[in-house]
Image 1 (cartoon, rainbow, N blue to C red):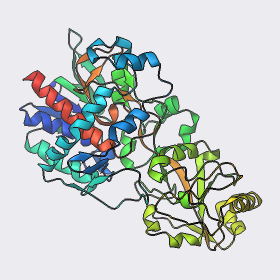
Image 2 (image 1 turned 90 degrees about the vertical axis):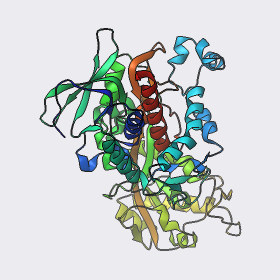
Image 3 (image 1 turned 120 degrees about the horizontal axis):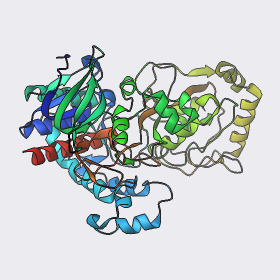
Length: 489
């Protein structure tokens, strides 16, 4: 199965075997098209980020999305958007100027289509025996509703791969897509790939779908777009190392319009010592965050953790050496389920004094003691109500940076700490698509024969709309596969 034949032809070639690529493939196969799947990873590791995610979905239940689904996208559509663009976007899509159709902001029509197709896509996944339901989550507080795939992303991709093979898909593992093919009219006509033997071959197809993820596994692209701090940032799970950005590179080189925020990424706070995937540490709203200098640098509890952790974690990457420590005390035992907020398999560092803890962390003891003392003095009186599972308004007074909730002095030994770095779940930069998941060029025109799905679609700016990435993969994958069926048949 790993031999890539010269001029292998199919109706659809799909690059990537995560939730996006497999949703595309199965949709196309169900419509009677032939499909070739390209996957750079060996078979035991196929699936990119999808293999490792718990697949949380911003939904009330399997039939309803959360109330704030579209609202959150609208509130995070990009920085300083030109009012002329917004005014033009209020007209019918056919009347949009080309510069608006190609603008990197998330088109309202695309987001509305995304939201409208979530319930039917989940129902489609249900048809394969997959289920979504409330699941335990590491977030002790939440500002929206969520359910999760039973068995996580691994269950999704394994079942869809099984279905794709049963319907006749050809799957080429350890094969990397490196360039787009064009026919004599300039239409995208397939993919040039490098197989396990290191040789380049052509995989021709009438429709090409890029579902190859972002560029979190490519240090050169990370540095180009994110900047020098990229040296401190690593993928949140092993699957991210396979996402090296070739799909984006080849599409942009062919004239595709970029979309999403290329200089940003979905950040998660992880313990750098842990070998586990997504070894998140979310206890910091109940303590303080300090950098290598022993200083606080951000409001640890401006809102619930799910509303703030993206920005908090990106700020950690801006600290000296890209690392911070959360410090909390034995009062944490009063917080229900607090251990669920830590997914690291490494223990907390512990000491009976702040100076002793500083020594273990390699931080300047005098500076850390001063930071803790200043924080303690700024905390509200102990008589105020501490409500750990809801915003309680217990803020510090007369000290910067602020802490807006859950502030109480760190006074009860033992004192504990976890190191935290900014891990990259996925990059925000992607390709501009329309409501059919067709890739648009820099003049807002459809690039015939080319589609994108999943992380390769650029729709995120500023703050990630949490628990929508798996849905993005499944929905845009289905849109691409279904449109290919309609077009090619």
